[in-house]
Image 1 (cartoon, protein in one colour):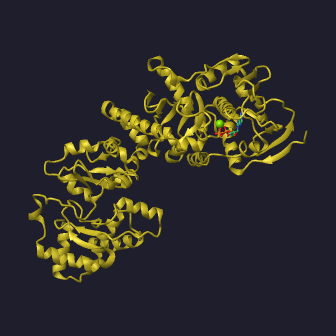
Image 2 (cartoon, rainbow, N blue to C red):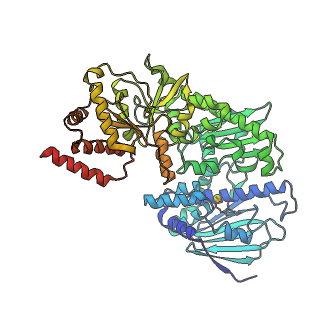
Image 3 (cartoon, rainbow, N blue to C red):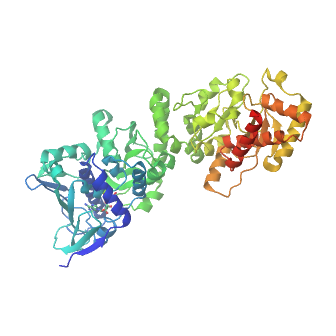
Length: 615
Ligand code: ADP
Ligand code: MG
């Protein structure tokens, strides 16, 4: 026996503990789900190890979870016969913020500066410490499954330190004990505890008892037939496998026999996690081999762009005692992945056809991840392209159209599919490049998701119609019917364009008369071989030293201001007002493009011009 040794929590852990104790009030009961989930993980681990290794402590101990509550003493304990913890585990796994998501979580909480829903805690994998919502001190007694392990006691008041000492503990596994705070003594009532278990942990693979009475039904739901499963059970099961608190958007149950045999029960969540790409790439489907879990998050079961789905896959085609590496390289896995992908895409196609509201909800939440499949899954590329959705100048904000529907609405003489990208719809809609399209009632896709600019230009064409950014200089637009008569004649145009070129020098790639402007005097467009402007903005954000290629300035030859400039030009091409106005127009266009670097200069020149105008 040794003296208790004291350890300090890492800084993030302290922060997290503070938050748990002081900000999380809404769902204190989730501590129970977290404890059961950890016990279940530990039992899964020993079950998996015992498949190949019989040399463990207590080899015949039943795999189960026992909860004891004492209403009088306000005490709670939970014990499992799982893998247990070594001293190292206690220090480095229990005392550490493990997942990257947790730090993200902390940041979000700080930013929002508000009470956090306790449910979020589970999603971010800070499970164990949720117990500090209901108690002031936790005691953990544990012994690892290795035969030469020692019994250990870990205690903490959650205030920055914890202690570890050796104890006498003959049995394998972990027991967690604490006394409930006065305002949480309900969790020492056995009916209350049983209800919570039914709500959150009904599908745990191991028997759970409360004061000696069994509570859950141990069953593999995915082994039941479709009509045997109730909607309610499905929702419950989804919440159990995903740690989510909302019902799923939809599900898919598969029972396949043939080239590859597997059963699957998978779900599309109804909302995206806070950190979509981060979290969903770490998480995935649970992999079972004949009802025994062999991997908690088997990322090899799904391509990245579908990693938002949750659920289980159970196959008899994999040997139970496989290592992670064998799973990864197994042809069985490749076959399951291929089949799952096809089935999931099929489900989405069906939603898109039968239930647009559902599909839009899916797309709002997971579209940013899903669409990346266009660039990565060549076998299914066309299917995915058909499943893409876009806001357009003819859809309401938050509603979408498919490329197919866009094409069906194209004007008889329209040969191209047009798009315009930007950060927000409101910003895009003010882009002067849209004027021609608005006036002529031509639909334009509005790309607001940053991912779009990696996808859409690469699609090149759909249904043999080229896909074109309307910010490119080489658009082949038919002039407006009423354009010719209002426009400056060719000589005047040419002469004025020369002045523009002289004034702007190497600030622009070229200056040309515009076919697309209606109400604005000038606009900047990309040269023929330039990147999409939104892509350029992103490059600039990622790389400060990135220098965007120069743009082409288009000038609206029927705009009253341009006509005034032409008059000034005729009278005296050296008139300083001419030069100042040209610079101002150019910088205004930069401003709209979000590319103006010297607003001070812009404003002082504007003031000068206004003084002149109001004289
Ligand atoms: P997570 O479960 O997401 O890893 P937790 O905070 O719930 O995060 O648990 C932290 C770690 O503590 C676990 O990963 C595990 O290593 C260890 N642990 C917690 N409870 C148990 C238990 N009952 N048996 C064995 N190890 C446990
Ligand atoms: Mg946990």
